Image 1 (cartoon, rainbow, N blue to C red):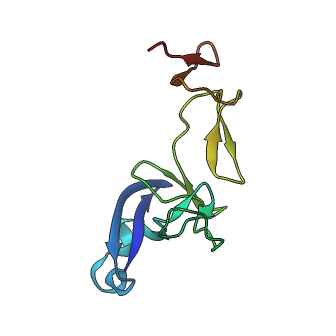
Image 2 (cartoon, one colour):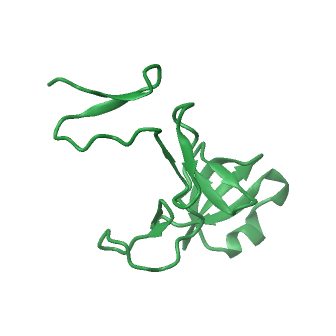
Amino acid sequence: MAHYAKVNNGIVEQVIVAEADFFDTFVDPNLGQWIQTSYNTLNNIHYGPDGKPDGKLALRGNYAGIGYIYDSENDVFYSQKPYESWVLNKNTWSWEPPIPMPIIEKSCYWDEQQRNWVIQND
């Protein structure tokens, strides 16, 4: 069994677990394209059962989620752009802020108007 994403016009509409022959037998190819995705792939890294990178080939950049973009030219999945100022890293296929998040013990969030991280006061 494997995970497959249903893609229409470059957007993931559904993700299911199925055998490959399921699509040959039960799925109308006119109702969208089904593309395999890996639950073990995140930021273009493949993770083993222990949750650590295992060196195996990452499949299509990221595990596909509903609403994700499928880039057919690069054969990858990635999330929608979270903020206008963020940039897509085409090595990890993840969005990055223009300023790295501070490494602190408090929570923080991105403020798009300020284009900076805001530290939350507890």
